[in-house]
Length: 419
Ligand SMILES: [Zn+2]
Image 1 (cartoon, rainbow, N blue to C red):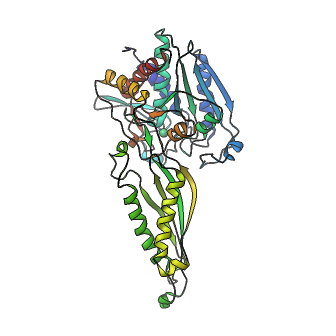
Image 2 (image 1 turned 30 degrees about the vertical axis):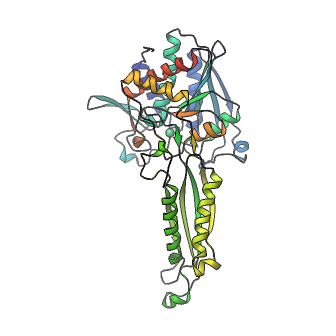
Image 3 (image 1 turned 90 degrees about the horizontal axis):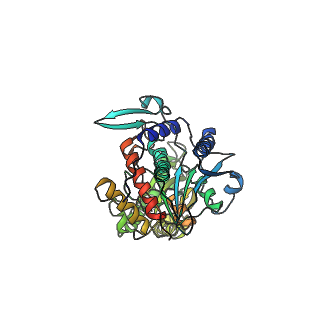
């Protein structure tokens, strides 16, 4: 369809520049990078709105998705390329926050000074945030420039939203939706290795309080060990995970366990020679596509209640389930939606290959865009998610170019004509 060519030089320059902002969740650079983008886009002649986020007020709302670092300020921004009218609105949503670099010794250079390295003939750019997901942001930006530079007129609007706070809950996307931003379709260019990801499983953090009765270990049969009482609960959770994964949505079929139920921490007892009177276990419950958060919670609470009822001690001293921390709903977009077709066809024409389509077992802003915003949303972007959050995080510049050209084509397919 289109034969628009993205600029390797612009992509390399812009990605290097964005990586130089250490936009770690909760840092000053997280706000500064938003401001820098607004300034750069205005200098290129785009129409850009920006506004302050009332973080305290947003966090107090009942459906706020959560925040794991402290923030006192935040900035919202939206680039709008208004069409001639009567067309669809296509939105690109890209987060600008990154996770901390971790042990600097594990990096081959400064995490925030991007550098190119030739690996078996491909140009990799290395730096924190290259893969997750400043490359995706640059690809969407470059796609818009390609279409504009080609003098193509659009009926529909194209929007580009840089958002903060994705890594610790979704503050930026939540604020964008609260600001009233809506669209007919949304692409989040997260690192999917140029596959279409139309669905994300959810994740709910929980804590179990397993009671026991303390006594001296030399007389242990007169007490009740909370550790021993946790064993049947753990077994019950294993059976629950198997039941919850017995039949999953075909889009999740590639994962051995689509919706993992995992215990991450266990703490019990305070003395080696005392029978422990309390065990605290924390874990993460996967939420199935199409399943409500309430139903997912109920399934775990019921499994724990049933296992407690079968045990003489736990029957009278039941295990308590608490929900705390990140509470990510699942989210999905119908693979029959035209957006999937536009991206799939554009990808095939650009690469000569059929695009891979699968759901991911982790949560992202997709759930907020599709769930809270009601906007059909997919992820499609450059980079392998296995490189995200890792030392020497990298992205292949060729993949960023491909993504930019595919997204340019998607802009034309979705916005060139009246809807
Ligand atoms: Zn990401």
